[in-house]
Image (cartoon, rainbow, N blue to C red):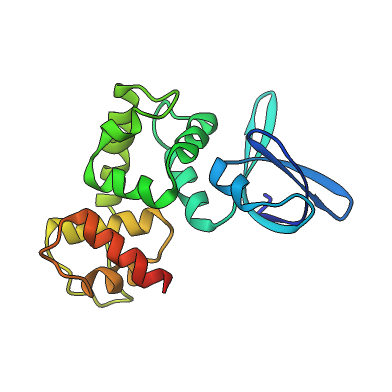
Length: 193
C-alpha cells in the first residue's frame, strides 16, 4: 500500500494532481481543496488511498490526514464509491463535512453533484452510527464530557482524524451550553492553534 507521495507537482488537471517522485509521476485523484493548495513546480506531500477493483487501480491523494480520514469513512457507506466520496469532499471541506454528519444535516449533502436525498440520508445515518459505536476515552480513564452535543462534537472531531484524547480535551474545554456546531468550530480552532 502507498501511504503517501512526496515530490514535485508536475501537473494539475480538473480532479487530478500528478506528483513526480524519483522520476515516476503518480496521478492522484483529489478534491478541489487539495488541488487549490498545490502549485505546479513546487514540492508537495499527499496522503494516499489506493483503490483497486477487478479491472482498475486508482490512487487518491489528499493534502492532510483529516481529509483522507473523511474519504475513508465515506467509502464505507453503502452505495458510496471513491468518485462520490471525492465529489462530497470537493463540495465541502473536511471540517464542514464532519459538522454536517454530526448535526445530521443531510440536506447540505444533497447540494453536491451526484448525491441525492436517499444517499445523503444514508451517509449521515451510517457515519453517525459508526461514530456512536466508538468508545471515547484517554488511555484507561474516561474524560468528563457529558451530553449529546458534546458526544456529537467528539465524534465529528474523530471523523476529521483527531485522536479520542485530543477530541475529548478540546470539547471539554468549550462551553457545553453551546449548540453542537459551535462546540465543533471552537474545538477545531483550539486544536489548530
